[in-house]
Image 1: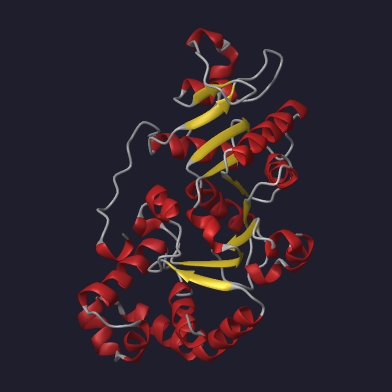
Image 2 (image 1 turned 180 degrees about the vertical axis):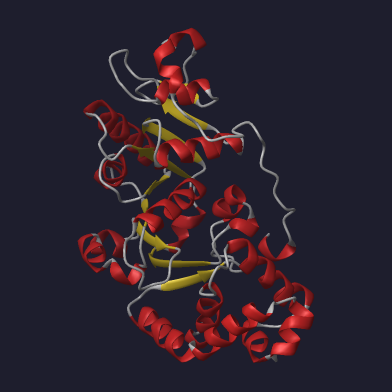
Length: 327
């Protein structure tokens, strides 16, 4: 994509209080119903925005403000492209089909900012997730699964947090595998990381990916918003260690609601974590080598059953039917 075209995509994703569903729904109207481009859309009058696209008065004010920022967004796009970054819109064939399938096309991020081998996005993949303060046995399990992934030519998806995430990345590279680093920040703010993994990026073994505005700094909110992307990019999910709250816990519960196969390490009797609870809720128990093993409900001690969980956990989420634009 040219930088001028990218600027319109960036503008669209920066509309206040517009999430992925609203943005993608509008994209469908623009490309499929009206059969125009983003540049044409932004050139339309406020009246047309209201009548043809159903935008409210507040929406029109926000889109007008975004339109005024186009020169700035164009500069950002040019700067990214000059540094070897790429921007992949959801309409591109380079976009991860796995991410669309797992998140549902309307919920998928409209833009992916990347650095590295974009072909990795189309490869078979798995994520190894777990606590930032994981035990040694959990880190050893992570290393084992990463080694198996490299042997099977599967890409390891990592959130680049300390603990299991970092171990998954390091082990993947140690065993000459490939990995995707999913950032909790804008890709322009990851300079030190780009430098650290520059050789692996150039060699095609690491892809750095962000779904956030390029200049966004790290934040807790972005770290939480990144977690669904990690799970979404992976065809298989292995859980090394989980507590009864936090990103791993909520991510696994969300995955189970979506009927995804999630493999959880069966913990030793002396371990204090929520792995057994997740298994009891429907995750697949695996041994240290990642092999499925039988699991009995009675194995869970009664005291472990007091963990709180989100309400309506059993309700199945309904998703809109996939439209042509995102196939």
